[in-house]
Length: 268
Image 1 (cartoon, rainbow, N blue to C red):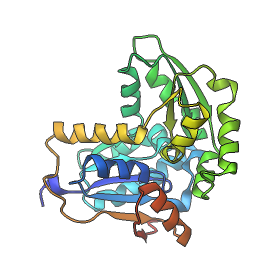
Image 2: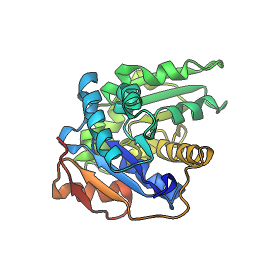
Image 3: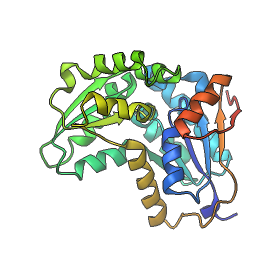
Image 4: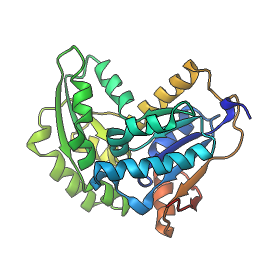
């Protein structure tokens, strides 16, 4: 089997990374994916850096054994805390990408964005990765960050599109840390699920970036540049989780916009 036809491997602490997987399916329909949601350890966002690195390396090893040509860390907490370690571990066995760099590059390359907000898990915000990377650019850019730790469990428990989620969204977004922004980075792959609710809170006057689509388009460009684009889908996608409840099937279908079969595979 040629490297071109090998699958794309991506992982997250739960089913949030399926927002990225769905975007990849739209942008790169000929590519095959192997997804791993480490639901036994979710959310990564409230874990220590060492724990996030340990879990990320374990899942990476699983994806390497599946002969993935690319390892995409489809989790902001892992991208912010374990990218260098995963890249060093993988070496030349596969390419390694994260979900932070494409969004940072998009913002820096858009002169209309002057004051950007970043929301994410505690691990992502406390790492300071978005702020550090965004402030490296030469043009003047204001960056304001806020940890929104209740969003992930809220979404994973199915509290979306209702009064509970709207109250939590309103409580976070009304804080002073995010006042005056013109754009908002959803620094967690769960958050695109509530993107429309966030946009409605701002009366659609703030540019809430479609981070999943941005990441998928960067992946497309990367595969093209490195002559790794698959010419046709070799097999069907596979979706693994380290722990499984029937409710995850419902949530996963919401993230992926269609019914998918989750396979339980505890690698721990």
